[in-house]
Image (cartoon, rainbow, N blue to C red; front, side, top):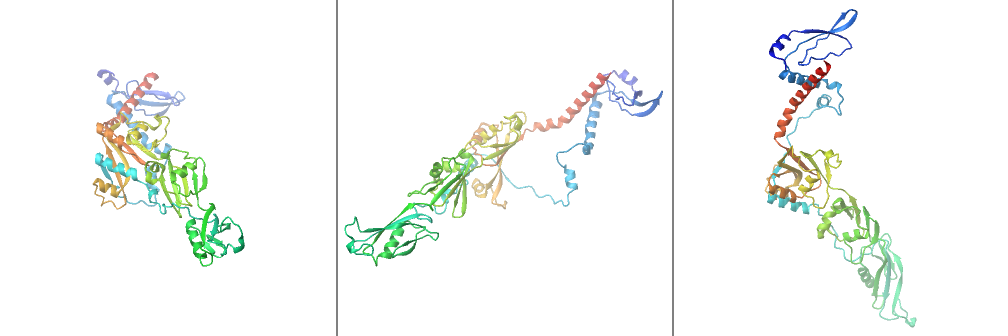
Length: 452
């Protein structure tokens, strides 16, 4: 900094001559107002400039800031990744009026809320225990099955056993094996066509006996399925050994069928089971079936079980470490690592809270909740027109109980976690342009020194 006397002495404009291709420089201790004036000196085109030296303190900062703000007018020369807001609105054929903000319920978490939402999380999506027709126990005959029928009579001389039959091992006759046709029927001599599809072997035996009782001597019939081709279960998708197999006489449950197919390829928390029955499909996560025995449904003939890998995910935004700084992760979308992932585990996988920016009193989880759950918690839901209500759970992790709550709170698929910034960060952001202006001024001063 110059003494005041020197500053006063240097306040007069100084005229410098440079070749046009030369770059004008600023003096060491001041910002110059450089006014290029083309002139000719001894046959050489020169640029005459005028400069003023002055105290560099606050003026240096303001000048650097002015330069920074002036660059904002150069948007048309700076490439953009996408159209900006002005261009988007200018080119719009129609601009609708802004709507009211989305209404949501904000709930600071307490033990009652925690218990209610976790209970719903445990029971959400359970449908296999309510499947229609899930009480099959006896195997029924299906189209395509191979059926054997044996008819017994009380004595010889009846419909099937002649009097002169001689020595026989018993008074019975085997009807040749038949395949159930597309109509679900088989043919029995003297009994006609009988619809057997969907019936148990015992039920078919009773029908045959009723039709032969007036022609045979106290007839009895034994019906059995030699080969099951219609009543089969298929297990497909992300299993180790997809297969199709007949239903056991005592029936088979879902997990048993998956075990026959070699088990799932992926963990239960990444696997979704879909059952196709009677033209409809029902889906549930494998985790729910594993942890709830009632969901291990009894399968019915003709069921198709399909396993799909659908990893459950959650998103983390706000004051957490930079996404690229965590093991090479390039996004803020994370997958579950177990069946019952907690909020604390989810935040830990995202790198934890940013110690320099995070407000540990304001950790939020965003999700949609059904009205019955919020009513149970005590939230007035009459103002919400939809069946699902936008809900925000707030955690205060500046206290020990907040950490216990976060470690107990169970995450759901597509939950969104937001970590608020500390109030002091706003002040730091406000000071950032001033700090940048000071740095720019220092750089300018350094250039002048080096040019002397």
